[in-house]
Length: 409
Image 1: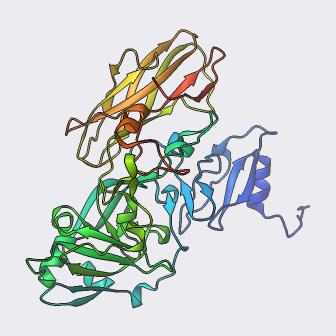
Image 2: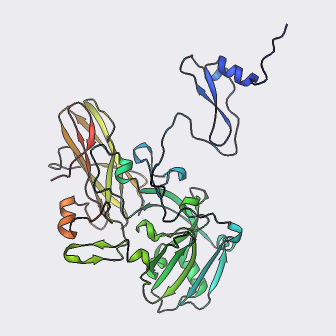
């Protein structure tokens, strides 16, 4: 006699239970089989999950962004591999939320000191020759000044991410509208409720700026500026204006709210540095780092280095709080204005110590200590400091505990 089962349990779910797995709901709605820790499992004995319109990460992978106040999220640097940040883990920073923009209604206006003021739809932008490049974006305030010992790489420097960006060269569009010889600056304006605006030198537009409509092979994510964002490789993130809707050419900077009340660098003696666009060379060790616990023996120290001035040419590692420095190996690809992975093999003997990293770029710039930075520019003001890139590292205790290290001497 055949046995009937309750209608709430189908044959696939019953087989899954018999094989030592549970069926759970994925983020995009499909059912995913995961191991039931109370029963042995053999994935060859049961059919797997079907194909879905959008793929999910394995339910066993837990990497996620850390959200701060609803306007900021940070990338889990310690959990990533290679140099490309998944679009879903790219850091966020916005000033008035993420606007919802219908791509069918999108328009970009270019006007001011041009021969032919023009509007471009998204479809018209995509008709121009496309260009693709890999580069990082970093918030200019990418370092909490009052970090405590129990700080992860994500909390320390998670306001930087890297993607493959595709779009149209801004120089191509400027040739299309015919910028006038006296035009030396342009205003980039976003469609968000804050109407984010920045003044940008035309020289950057003619160098390597682009309007990006794709990220890692797909449309730019809404939090990253969908449907079109400005991309200025190597420059502070706020200049790569998201949800771009207007560019106005002029012979002088516009002195907008964002570049006068914010994104300026107070220096010593009451002086303020303005238009400090380029992100200086920086590095961070992502392993070992808090909250990892180590055992004596061979350890591969790993991390990221980057610079807005071109290529990273070297990363030095110290395992004795900066007394002796040794070169780390750089992992290909080593691209300009891009995150570069570094590795250093070290045998820890179980003694307490500090491990540090410092980056060197092709201009000869060497990542400074905090004391060197403050000697040149003064102590930082407020909870964040712009363009603050001191050498940082990790304290390793005798029991293997890893904590954020005090500033090196």
